[in-house]
Image (tube, rainbow, N blue to C red; front, top):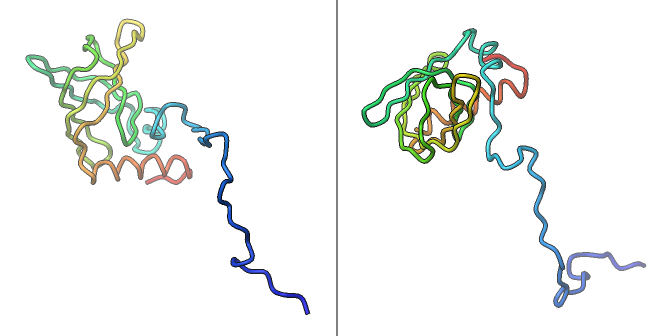
Length: 144
């Protein structure tokens, strides 16, 4: 009768080395989070635009959301902010009010306006989960 093979029959792998480091390809590129564009938000939330209030030292402006993810967002502003600037942002997504600090990560010319990428600094877990739910609803094509 044949002996059953089990874990104890597997030889030791001592001395076996891999000559490469496996890193899975990120389908999002360098981004950590999947973003949802304002056009998708229009469909999900039933709004034409999402105004975003941006406040920095001695300055206050209302722009419009371009896209959002759990880690940050891009806003279309009339004036240019410096990269690395700490700001406070506020917006309403559906019935959820989101207010937190953010750091500007990039500023790009978009016609006569400025597309400004912001990374959330102290986003509440409740807000992060809400954004994740919106993104998931778009990914799975289910309205909230």
